[in-house]
Length: 251
Image (cartoon, rainbow, N blue to C red):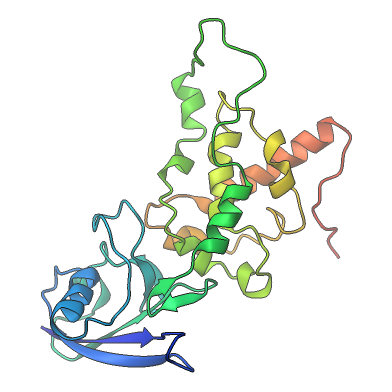
């Protein structure tokens, strides 16, 4: 079937404003959006900019907005986008939101990863040293943070987050998930070393549980749940020490 790929184009070096360019592509229902993009660059327009790497939904590099929703181009089939398999359908493609466009569908992820690094997304060893030189962990302890390990840093949740529309300084859902992966890890020092990033006016507290991040996650991570669990841990930590959180007062 023949589809029209309406792609939002913008090259900051040559364009004053973004514009939409349409490409006609022959596809099968089981083809991926990435297949169509590759067909365009190989056979119609080699100047189209987008990212891809593994093409199997593992690296997260080809996240973009497809028909208004954040998706991975390598995992999105035309049969799941179109109501019928007749010719003439249009698929709209745009870059992720909340990140500066470098070229076409390529965005600058510098600020995104700056926020990611701020939560110390790596092991911070506990003060005590295990007797046998290794940290033992039960299946139950592992299960507490297993959900968060699925994140592939694709930034789909960051793009979908409505809080970033009004507060660009918000830490963002992905960074909080990265923190939760270690906060709940029994082998790690946990919450304390990450409070400077999490318990601030732009840390976890701006989240209003709109669930948009959870809806678009290509790995089906319960992102909103993890954010709320992290809020709970911060409150418990502060209460135990007679301290106040940075959560703004309601009303």
